[in-house]
Length: 175
Image (tube, rainbow, N blue to C red):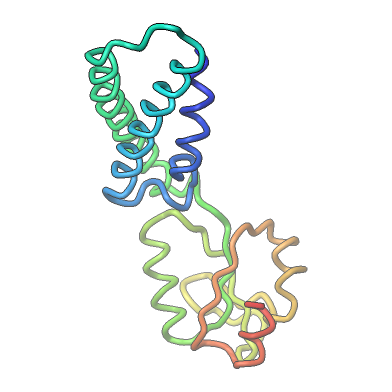
């Protein structure tokens, strides 16, 4: 029972609860191996201070193996259940793209295919407000107004395309 908080803290430290890190390839499983390994070491340390008798090595080995298998399998199954939600657009993050160059258009089309981001508009110095850039996605305003527009559109991500904006705009937004 005392080991559960240790596992939660270690899993958090291994970025297993970070939405930017999970759902991307095999790195999540490497983090699972690290988290379970550190968790078992944490259980050994806790048992050293709490119990007078050491834990059985066979139980620790089985705990380590089954921990990696079941945590990895659970994440694999959850990934298979959640990925269709992202692709359907029901669980996507609302985003604004700063810049409307050809590079920004191509990037937007690619991001729309993944289904993880819902691009709600563009912010650009050179295109007029209301101009359609990709499909029905239009220019919402100038980059300097990103905070106000993000609030109005309930946006959680701002995607800055460095080659699509002036140096002054890039510097102002990124710093």
